[in-house]
Length: 177
Image (spheres, rainbow, N blue to C red):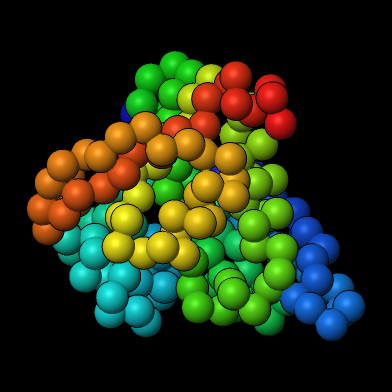
């Protein structure tokens, strides 16, 4: 698959959000760059160790396997990178990597949900899925809050042989919301 630019599926625009205290802050969705991914992973050793392969290769893989975007604040601080790997028509595996700064913004969840909606409208997905490392309960809570449901354990699936939980959000679940 050739490179899919963020602008073909994800909005390249500003999003107003509230980081708390009633102060509205503009977040910006821009085209994903490998350097964005690397800046998050290299600043967080735990995240980099989870990847299980050279960070630059993984960052490039995300760029070439489906649409992706980076979300930054007004000071151009990278909050998170988000995208989807096309599995086949109608099915895609989402990925996201959040910097510690993302927690500062109360509506990071809303922005993530908006990006999922953009992908759904552009490509007509009937299924989103994600392999989640259950050792990180905050990640499990976040994916469940997005409406994803656990489907089963993928034994020894992770890059270091750890188990992952397969989560999915299917059209019927989305329509019921």
